[in-house]
Amino acid sequence: MAIHTIQIYRRFERIWHWSQAVFIFTLVFTGLAIHGTHDLIDFGLAVTIHTIVALVLLVLWAFVTFWLFTTGEWRQYVPSMTAKCRGNMLTMARYYSYGIFKGEHHPYEKTMLRKHNPLQMITYLLLKIAIFPSIWISGIAYLLLSIGMVDPFGFISLGTIAIIHTIAAIAVIVFIIAHIYLLTTGHSFKEHVMPMITGDDKVDLTKDQYDYLLANEPNKVKFD
Image (cartoon, rainbow, N blue to C red; front, side):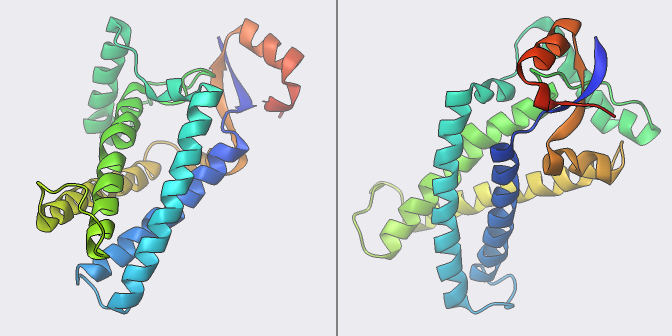
């Protein structure tokens, strides 16, 4: 295998990433205002913006889910349970908890079929199947109750729904803090961020993979 620069993140993927980032930061800002953490925005306006942006984000997530399954990109978020993958998880855990502070080389090299290391896969998978759905369901339930519609969860109080929504939101905030922190470690900030802007990144390719791209998708191969 050899390192080559190719287009690894598609245009839709990059638009989705940055749009989602803007929406989530907006939701965090307005959510904190609703909770009374700050008074930089009027309560009523915060509620309106929070509701509208949440609904727009929900539509975006619906498109993303459709895109992931129709393109097969969902495989990028499902870690293998092989012994090698479990070993890689332990290696990555050691790197993030110890090696990164000692200046050790990042132990994972991206490939065309595996853009994320095993710990990233688990984290993103947890977000997509547990944390985000918790926010969707609790948020919609809270909205329906707040406007006097039928209670979809008659056995759960409004206060409990609000707590679930808040806990899920805090989990997202923790993820954002960790995500931004890791952007400042290892490679330069530019090297971490530019791939999600241009779509291009350095990955390990076998000769067959490289030859396939040259023959079938030459626009993805970047020549220095």
